[in-house]
Amino acid sequence: MGGRSMKVNWDEEVCTHSANCVKSLPQVFKVEGGKFVIDPSAASEDEVRAVVAKCPSGALTVQED
Image 1 (cartoon, one colour):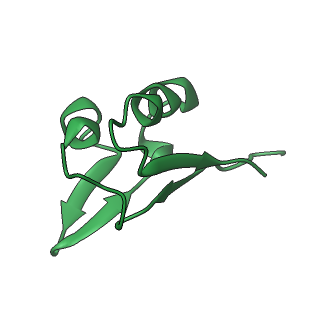
Image 2 (cartoon, rainbow, N blue to C red):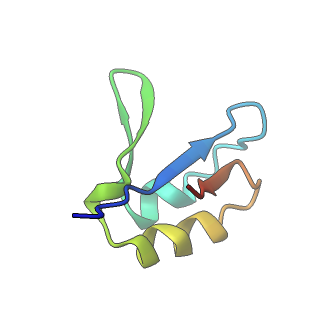
Image 3 (cartoon, rainbow, N blue to C red):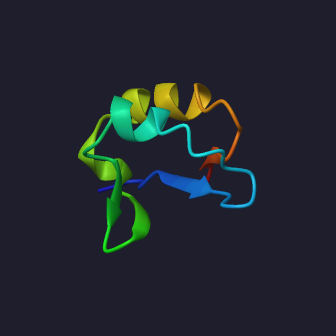
């Protein structure tokens, strides 16, 4: 079926907690139980890539297979 799943990495050391990602795509980037959770399957790949590209600190990156 070729269902490639996109992976987004988050570097906690680099993150400035601007919350741009959470505000932009709350269904993908969220805090659950005090932990930062990323669910890229909750939006289109283009939407996720757009938000990752706008991360001011560069803490978010898309991992290519």
